[in-house]
Image (tube, rainbow, N blue to C red; front, side):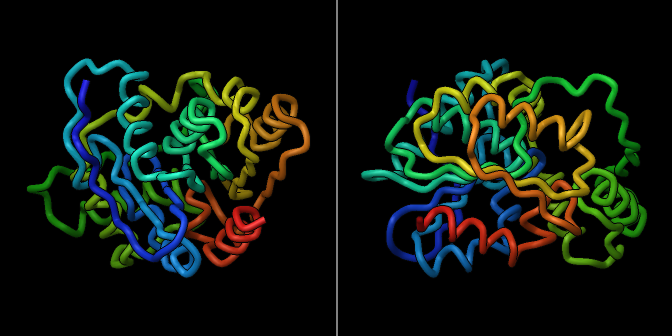
Amino acid sequence: MPWSALAARTEGNGAPFILLHGGVGSSSHWTRNIEALARHYRVVAFDLPGYGASPDVPENLEPEHYIDWVAAAVDEAAGDGCELAGFSFGGAIAARIAARLGARIRHLSLLAPGGFGAPKGRVIPTVKVPSLGAPSRERRQAVAANLAGWMLSALPGVDDEVVDMQIYNIDHARFDSRRVSLRETLLEDLRRMTAPVQLMWGARDALAYPSIDARVDACRAARPGMPIELIEKAGHWVQFEQPERVNELLLKFHRS
């Protein structure tokens, strides 16, 4: 079927470097990385289907057809070949795409990727976010608390710009990323893909279950020898909390 075009933030010139964001997100998940990458590449940071400014997802769309949609967008943007990075939900998708597109993906970076299956037994406290009609302060406090539990290594201030960013992403999320990210796909995709791949996690990532070490060990067994970095003072949203280190690692790997 023909897929509707996806919204994207584009910046820079040169070979394409495509970025795929995490669940309940948008291209803003890369807000602290795009400028650094755009000094060397034409960065294309997509809003994935059902997020940000991209089209809605048809009801009952199968997960693999969702991947087809994103793969078609990546394939079109890739030209003769591209650099690719995916975060969390976007990491699970990026791995699926790299396994399909072969040599058209020149290098792949996966940041705190999904695709390990459902984390049975994982418990992360969540604060119910009041609806749009609720007092703004209450809503911001709930969003800040959930960012600290799920995404960041520390509680952000209620007036921090990251809270505004997350509120936008919540209000524009119309797809349940768990339909894709909680499937067991990553390890098989690591075995199948031909592109060089690097992985990164924030050392305080609460979503990596049962532990970051367990996920690292599973990935090393699936694909021995690939570089894996654990980045201090960062939670799940590693490229936002430690952008200088992540940008350094991305550029070193993708320009090698």
